[in-house]
Length: 102
Image (tube, rainbow, N blue to C red; front, side):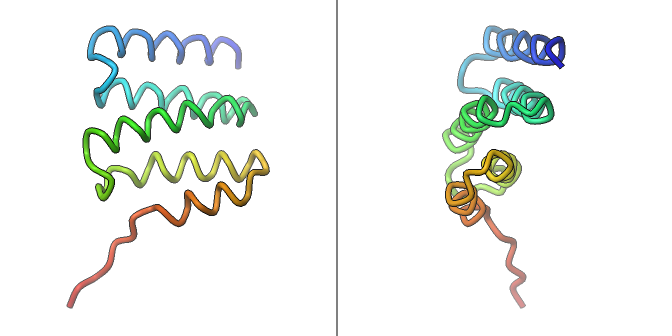
């Protein structure tokens, strides 16, 4: 698990260096790192990583974008697994819902 975390951290640094702080590739790399940390049981370390990915998506796509679903879901799930249920619920409530219009 430690090697996977190191690899994911290196990916974040490479994507940031190549594409810049405010870019989809950097956000994706943060999401990968958060996922690796979460699977390694390091939920509290994953929270700021997923939050960073979410912040980039919000800046690039806007707060109402469908692109926010995945980072919001990952953040909420990680908070829930870390035992931060109230914070997790608040994040789940922000996930955009598709509404069918007749």
